[in-house]
Length: 205
Image (cartoon, rainbow, N blue to C red; front, side):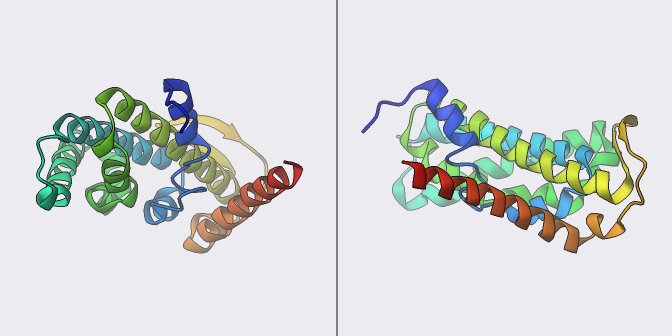
């Protein structure tokens, strides 16, 4: 088995174990909140905070948690960090908090968070659990922002982040893109492109 490295673990979380395109986890918030880049950034930031906090706590306590209470303890730890980020966002970013709505509390049951706690943090050191959290979190961020940017630019003709107009193009906006159908179509096309690239790479080996 290859020895783990910080760089290798970080890149793995972005590419090989990308939570959406590789592991196909957390699709509910990906489809629901990516109507804009701003929402995507908010959701990704909240998920990263919870993932980092829970990974650190689970890894630090892994030798002190009885196997029979493992999953309930993981959920309690995750709930703690979700409550913190929920209260912080409500206090400091009310518009974003309202836009994300129920999907902030639902991070508690996000398969990405509980999956990393069970599959990685509970079996590895705090150092590598932190790297894993940043790698998976970055992979999740890139997917959310990519989908959010595509849907927002084609759905509204512009990209606006916290009141700052970043991009504006002269097109007739397709409202369909910011509706659920647009979310499914966008993620379907992106997944097809990613899988096509993987198949080509495997054939070249």
